[in-house]
Every structure is written in C-alpha cells, then in structure tokens.
Amino acid sequence: MSARQTVLKYAPIFLALGIFSLFMRPPVPLDETRYLAVAWQMHIDGDWLVPHLNGNPYSQKPPLFFWLINAGWTVFGVNEWWPRLLPALATLLTLGLVARFASNLSAATSSERFRIRPEIAVALLVGSLAWVFYSTALLFDMLMALFTTMGWLGVLRAQRQLRGGWPLVAIAMGLGILCKGPVILLYILPLALFAPFFPLANPEQTQVSKRSNSSKSKWYLQMLASLLLAASIALAWALPAANRGGSAYADDILWGQTAGRMKESFSHDHPWWWYLPISLALLLPWIFVPSFWRGTNRAWANPSTRWLLLSAALPFLIFSAMSGKQPHYLIPLMPLLAIAATSDTTVNSSTKAFSGVWKRMRWLMPSILLIALLIVPNSVLQPFRMQEMAQRVHALQEQNIAVLYTGKYHGDLHFLGRLTTSLHQSRDLTKLPNWLKKHGRGYLIVTDRQAERLSIITPELLKKAEFEQLYRTGKMYLIDLAHVELE
Image 1 (cartoon, rainbow, N blue to C red):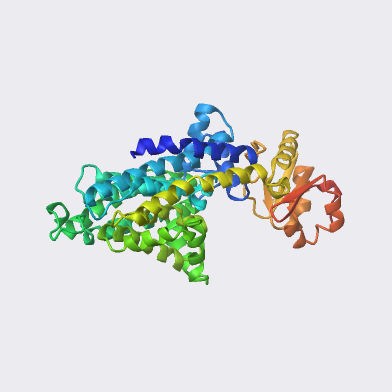
Image 2: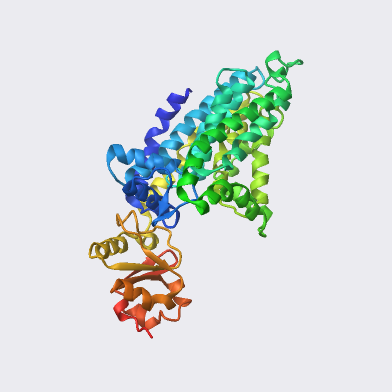
C-alpha cells in the first residue's frame, strides 16, 4: 500500500475522530487552552516572531505549531475547528510516511525468508488506543511524530545511498526543533547513529552490498552536516526572536530549552521505571495479542529490524532517566516498534493468523473512542468547560473593568473569550488596595486551591462570587472586589 493510499484509506476515520472530538468535548485546560491562547495572541498582535501568552513572551515552546494554526486562520478565519483538526491531519500524514518507510525498508531487505509488512504496521498504529487518542489532542506530539518519521525516512534513504536522504533528515530535525525544541534529536539521531552497524542486506547474504560499505567516518560527517543544517533552520528563527524578545526570553529559548532544561530534568528524583507500565498502556490492546509479542521476538533475529528496536530503545532509556515524564513523549517512537513487530521471518500460519488479527482489530480502538465521545457524561466534561467564565471576563473588559487573576495564569480564558486585553496577575494580594486605587474597580478570579492559601479570601467571600464553575478537580470563582473588606 502506497503512502497516498494509506492516507486516503484512513482519512475518514481520523477526520471523523477529530470532528467528533471538536463537538463532543471542549479544549482541555491547561495545555489545550494555553496553546490556543498563544496562537490567539499571535493573531491579534500580528507578531509571528515571538509568541506571547497574556502579554508576556512565551518561551516554553517554539512557534511552528502556532504558525500552522494562524496560517489556517488566515485562510478560514479564526475558529476552533482548524487547530483541533491539526493533530488528526498530522496523524494521517505520519501514517503515510510510516507506510513509505516500511516499503523502502522492505525493498532493501526483502527476501524469501524475511519481509516488512507496511499495511500491518500502519494498521497496528491505527488499532492502538494511544495513537487514536492523541490524534484528537491539541498537543505537539502527533506533529513531532510526523517530523520524526520524516527524519527516519531520510536516514533510510541515506543508508540506501538514494538522493535527498540527508537533506530530508536536516529539514525534519529543523522543523522538529521549531515545533518542540531539540527533543527531536532524541527521536531521529539514534537511527542514524546505529545505521553503520546495520548494513541493509538480505539475511541469507554472506557479503554486504557495496552501497552499505561507506566508511563510518564519512557517514558521521554527513550526519553532523545535517545536524548543522537543522540548527541553521532553527536559528533562522531563534536569533531574531532572541533579539526581539529581550535577554530573559533569549536565555530561555537558547539555553533554558536545551541544556538548562536537561539539567533540571536530571536533578530531581523520579522513578526510572515509570515508563515501563506506561509503555504497556500505550500498546493497548496489542499487549493481549500473542502474535504481537511473537512478531517483536522475530524482529530481534533480523539486523534490519533489530536496528529499529535499538533506535527506539535508546531514547526510551534517556527519557526514563529524566525526571520530567509524560506518556505522550513516547508517541513518536511507536512507528519503529510497529514496523519491527509486524515483520515476517517466515510466511506461515502464524503470519496468516496475525494478519487476521489486525484486520479484525484495526477499527476497534477508533470505534471505542468514537462511542466514548458520544456517551461520555456531561458531568465528566463540565470541569473543563471554560466558555461562560471566558465570556463574562470578556464582557468586563468591554466595560474597561480590570480583572485580576490570582496565581499563575495559563491562558484558560483567552481564546474562548476572544480576550484582547491581558489579565492582571498576582500571587500577593497584600497589594490589592493599591491595585484597586489604580483601577478604580475590579474583579478577582481565584480557584479554591488558591483561596485556601490566601487569608483575604474567606468562605463567606466565595459565597458572594458573581459566578462560579467547576474547574479541573475544584472550582473557579469570579468575585467583585467591591465585596472584599480591605484594611
């Protein structure tokens, strides 16, 4: 199955998932609403160089994702559906690249006793709960999976001495850095690092082909050149952005997102084994299919698929050593395991049984998620519905009434309320009298968790809130400061 056929075949299911998700659930705080807020401020400010959140430079993520959102808004107008469909579109393109990568690897290693099965590898991803779930999440990880697979395809082309291999690797790494930072190197470079030790040849061949006999030094020099080209792509944005954003922003994007963040990740205690159960959960429901484990075991017997497994294992170990762990960090590694696990060492009854399993199960997880979106109780989603609070804040700003947010504001209200004015922020309410003198009148937004730490916010005051709503695991309140007794 070609890459184009793969995309067309699975487009209906992933577009349906994206559309159902759009209508059946709100954008979830903190992450989804924050990314929408950054994209929204980029739109209203017209500043595509330095992303902002609530009026301050936002250095936690590079701008590529926000550029893509704003590019769609330029064409379709500001809406919620375009950003929410982006992960589904990235998922489809990734599946197409997975099919192409598997086909290219199969062409390089095919023999009577061993072959790669692209259609089963794609179906294994489609039938994976994690892959389907994150295709509907407004996060960076499916876009990172797209760039990662693009980089792997470039490495494979370079390994086969085909044109455009290393430039494709460089472009993929450059786009990945612009999307989520240098973490893209952990996904792509292991495949390139191990490549000289796994020349592509049929298992029964006794001699390696001339194409795979290029010296290791030449290979690694080419890899270094592609890395420098990727860095130049990223620096084409980072250097002007650092100059525009100021010294603190420059330090964050040039240092804090690389070595500084790595140092922090290794400086806190966190269980090294955390990813072991998570990885099993990501592979649901395939961990209950015996032929999946047999396929993974078979993969280790062949140099080509052993190359894939080791290239996934190295970043897995590095992520395990870091304290900052999230399940979706492993998503871009899943295609390597899917391709390796669905390879055949022999065409036998076991192979036919596995083919039958994926044909029956590939639609199971998409169907389950669609049904879950339809039947999920409103009470479960209510703590994430920020629309009414956002609209109330918008109405206050239209009246030139200042709004003060206690604690750290993550942008929960900005896009939903189409706010064009930044919210004031403060953790120290002892300065509230001076703030009120400056603004004349104001409102306070506080969560119950924050209220517990502030003596000025009493239970009686919370009862006088003009509006309250469920928020994540607690509540959020909108309070008219005219009810606050100040000393």
